[in-house]
Length: 281
Image (cartoon, helix red, strand yellow):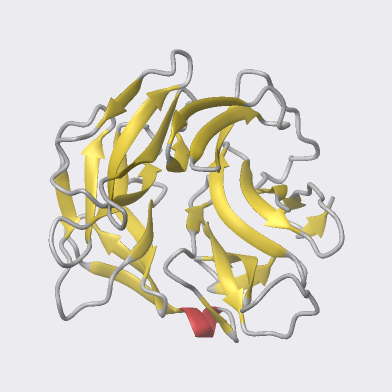
């Protein structure tokens, strides 16, 4: 069973969360994209698809459509749905039938994603209306694939991971910084589905890490994912979720709160963590 679990990257003056009716989260359920108020009320399906990402102003949702073309093959396009009207703009001009994991720039003008127009995966971007498709970092046969791309706070670089390292890559394709995952988090690694998100101030990364640790859960095989915050200045990581809790895929964020699907050992809960003190509320 999965439930929402949220984590607050708050300012020093932050003391309480006020949920407002005009802000939304976007999430995926049974291959469909939904929106809801920040407190989880008034959920509404807006499209069939996967991997939703809500725009910074909350008015649009980028996601992947999934079209089954045979018993074993699927076509996945990028698309954007208008929250108010439900109108979907399908980006069929993107020259690939395999595109994944959209990520918005802070100004909502561009969308970053991974795409596979040939035998390797590229990091690419497109305007939010589907125009101006361009490759930021082409893939290469002798290079590992970069997964989970996300824009840096200033929109001038991107973060991604290759299951061994986390990278910050400039718009010129140059690697600006590189961190070994097992050094950031001992006994930790990331899968191709391991997600990265950036705090609103751009100073921290939120990482879903597969932990190489014993688990008492009988309903889970393999490593349990945990949520970590990595401070880019101090180069130190802090674990946010306890052992025996499983963190799923990130599905949306507001200016101060990150939302994740999660399952706890004995019961479903909803929590947030105030990151300046790392205290559970």
